[in-house]
Amino acid sequence: MKDRPKYKQIIEAAVEVIAENGYHASQVSKIAKKANVADGTIYLYFKNKEDILISVFNEKMGHFIEKAVTAINKQKSASEKLLTLIQMHYKQLSESPHLAIVTQLELRQSKSELRYEINKVLKSYLEVIDEIIHQGIEEKEIRNDINPQLMRQMIFGTLDETVTTWVMKSQRYELIDQAEEVHKLLTEGFFVDLE
Image (cartoon, rainbow, N blue to C red):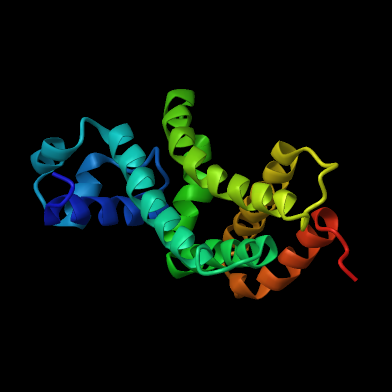
């Protein structure tokens, strides 16, 4: 089902409709109209509106993680990998402003069962961050006196908050321009001074 063009059309339409109207005001009929399909067609692919939102996040986040991992794997050191992660995070969301609105604002207003499903997808992204941290600690590039889970929360929290601020400020500046500075702030806090 997921390889069918109509499934992709509905996912893309849902991102736009939810970003423009908010999740609660986004009726299935609006998504169907934007996707140029009949209302009933939606139910061939999705159980309900919540299922659409979860599927949007699954699809988009899966693709997002795949691209980030491909770029990160081309780097050697933990510091280079972290910079690449930050750049990819900012680049992908700034290239898809509607998706940024959905991930940063709309997903947070959803019910706890929905957030639980979304957190399952997010777990694999956090594992990417964990791998960078563990590599850095093993190679003595990252300090070993800081709790890795706290480090991960700080990295993800920083990325998340900077993107949310960018969304709230109507995307009036280039998000990617902050990558170097965010990387510097994080590495100065976690990384060993090699000088």
